[in-house]
Image 1 (cartoon, rainbow, N blue to C red):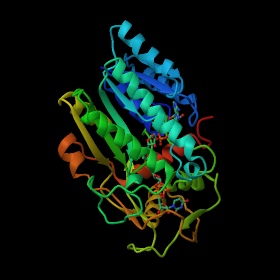
Image 2 (cartoon, helix red, strand yellow):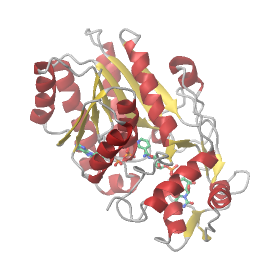
Image 3 (spheres, protein in one colour):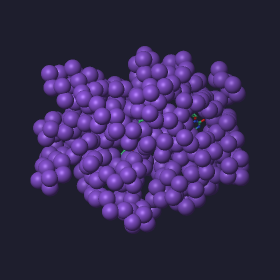
Image 4 (cartoon, helix red, strand yellow):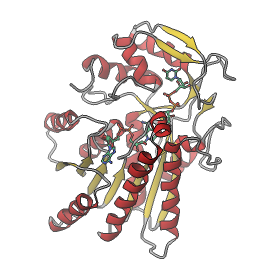
Length: 348
Ligand code: NAD
Ligand code: WQD
């Protein structure tokens, strides 16, 4: 089977790429490298050599907003008699704060880019899609655990673009072409790294998210972790989130491909999380325990747009995809730290 993986050089995409290749898929990565490094591609190639994998791997540097590039990928694969069976679409922009400053850019990349992709898919009769949606679409509510039926109320342009894309899926599914098969996966907080330490999360600039910030404090790239609030209505006052090991998340995509392959026309919105809520203080404690590194932190005021608690009800993913996250918080800390010590300055 051949998979087109947009955004495959990014944090989540690179991990999905390894899993796909390991399981014998042909993989074409399309990425503009606007938020990733081309070194990722070399790391994927190293992985293939180490494992003596014969799978075919290609990458193309390009923008999903460029329809010619997309069309050419589909045309070439048809000419090679190996048409693309499924698209896993991750290419897009993901910073909440940046989206507040540059909303039109987010609509352009995320929404227009996805529209372009869907147009090419339709033109070249590839109707099977796995998409990277986000728990951010559930907005400011903290009634947990959150199921897929939870009210959709995005509170920033980034979240709005994910909702707009999901709405496109509704329209496609309800159209008279009864061929579309779509899983829109709503990720919670993907963290950790591949256990090889070859690939991991390498945010550009100062990390916005807890886990990469924490590992950078541990390695000495950041001085002190700011804890955004210790007065939330949670067990210890710090914010509670659903941290899922990146490999468990990646596995959810393979399970989704299996699901799409064994079903006719379908559209499913599916939470991917661990199903557990951990507080910031719990994360710090577990990281210290696992790695033996002390994490200096200071309590700050609450961050704008945060909620007290956000974690997933994952019963739909379990039932529909036969998928269960397997890796513990300890494993997350172990693998995340292994990546950070092997790559103290990220990909460079
Ligand atoms: P990432 O930034 O590491 O990866 C996204 C990749 O897309 C990058 O390699 C980037 O260069 C590429 N890209 C961006 N714009 C592009 C364009 N116009 N054309 C081609 N490539 C382009 O982010 P990630 O964490 O791997 O997230 C992947 C997807 O999952 C995103 O769509 C994101 O919104 C979604 N998501 C991420 C999280 C998270 O916490 N990481 C949570 C929920 C949803
Ligand atoms: C987790 C907890 C913070 C940093 C974000 C996006 C969301 C999704 C995933 C894409 C919160 C606290 C954080 C720090 C802290 N991405 N924190 N100090 O906010 O759940 O979700 O990433 O779709 O859209 O909003 O994740 O890692 O930023 O925060 O105390 O330096 O850690 O307040 O309680 P969040 P996060």
